[in-house]
Amino acid sequence: MKVALVRQQYTDFGGAERYTSAVAEHLIDSGQEVHVFAHEWKGKRDRAQGGGIVFHRVPMLKGLSVLEVVSFALNARRMLKRERFDIIQSFERTLYQDIYRAGDGCHREWLIQRKKIDPWYKRITQAINPLHLGLLRIESEIFREGNYRAIIAISKRGKEEIVKHYGVPPEKITVIYNAIDGKRFDLQERTAIRNKVRKTLGIPQTVPVLLFVGSGFKRKGLPAAIRALARLDSEIRLMVIGKDRIGPSRALAREEGVDHRVIFTGPVVDVENYYCASDLFVFPTIYEPFGNVCLEAMAAGLPVVTSRICGASEVLHEGKNGFIVDDPTDHGEIADKVRKGLKLEPQTVGDCNKEILERHSWERYLEELSCLYEGLYEENI
Image 1 (tube, rainbow, N blue to C red):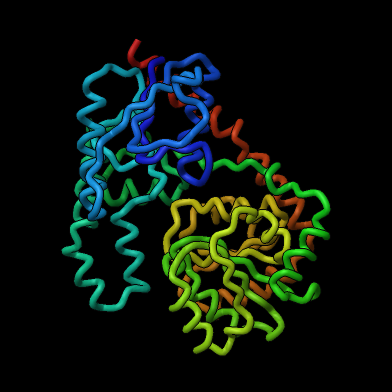
Image 2 (tube, helix red, strand yellow; image 1 turned 180 degrees about the horizontal axis):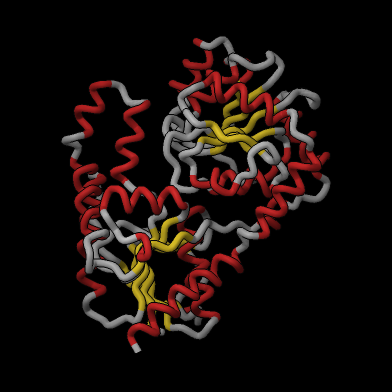
């Protein structure tokens, strides 16, 4: 097969970009011809090094976010139409593809959910924001009948949102949950790592630590987590890892009287060590299509407390390896679920996490994707 993959940034490390890289590597190893359409890329396998990937640089206007999104979508379509491909898979909101992976979820649904946390004036400006208007226009084109052959949703809820908002036939949407490399979190000398991290951060070894990981604190529920902390035992700490403005969160922690109990680390490279130093992962997100951080926490052996709107909640075994929060803005409910989570038996949590992670390996993910590819390819024969 001659396959085109579309991603604004192509790298062989990190988050969503890692999915593009993993798919490209798998296709190359199975003997396919792979083309990557991206604005920029950082990776070890390019044509000059004999890696087998043909890169196409997609021009993009820089500056306003809406210009970046729209210009990339238009230029990618123009370039893709110049050649014939057996399969075109887009990991971005673009305008020309066979398979669209809705890794960012449904933007129309996100705009609905963010009203729970936005002040009144943002609800007004949201309706005329050029970025939102542009994304909604592109999204409606993606899901228009005839503009796709298959859709990949990364959770059942994500599939339901696309069906609800855009009327896509359910049989056209395949749910393929995200994958994780669990070996990354299988740390040796866990006790030593745990003690070292806690000592560095000034956290007593016996104090329960809640961990929050995510960039975009407001959307991912940090304000509610801080308010919940104020309703928990005074010895409990909250460790916050991620990139965002810390000022508003610090101010909220002071207002709630827990500023001495919240530790902000900023982004870190060795995040697995911080999972190891924690006792429970808390992620009361307002909207999250999946939430790989929940799988990371499971791989590190932690119980997870997350919101029902988080796609990863669908794979959680409530009462065994964590709890689900129905209302991510209800800090009382979050505090209650955290208390219960901290009482779970570690052996039960570990066994349950292991069972779940076996179903979320990269091997499983790529097998499911290959089945989808082969089905579409055979339709053309």
